[in-house]
Amino acid sequence: MKNYLGRIILLIEDYEEAASFYEKNFGFKKMFDVTTDAGQRFLHMGSDPLDTLGIWFLKADTKEQKERIGNQTSGQPTMVIYTTSLEELFKKLKDNNVKIKVAPVLTPEYKFFHCLDLYGNEIVAVEIK
Image 1 (cartoon, rainbow, N blue to C red):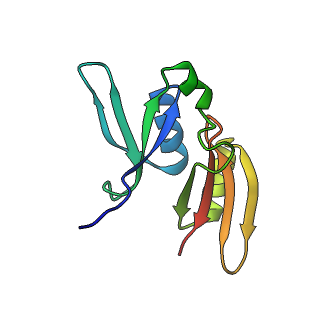
Image 2: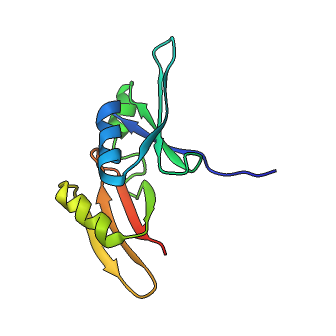
């Protein structure tokens, strides 16, 4: 038996707005996008290969869900995104006016920075070799 993570779930206000942010800034692609007959949409985004961990966007419907958009983890980071070039990703996000919460930390052992998505979810970007 093999167990692995499939998707993290993010509450959002708008599917296209969220998809555009993650595509523009992190190069994520739509992995799965289906709307059921009942009108429920399943939009999953991620990177190659398409069977890796991704994000499942869920549109907030209730008052309680709407209040949690951007704050699902009570101020803690929502996710970690790995990159092979922290400098290139940082420049791209700065050029796209993404809010940086923690400036790049560069050591011989690790490199990372923190940024916020369009709803205020905190993302840690970490360079891997």
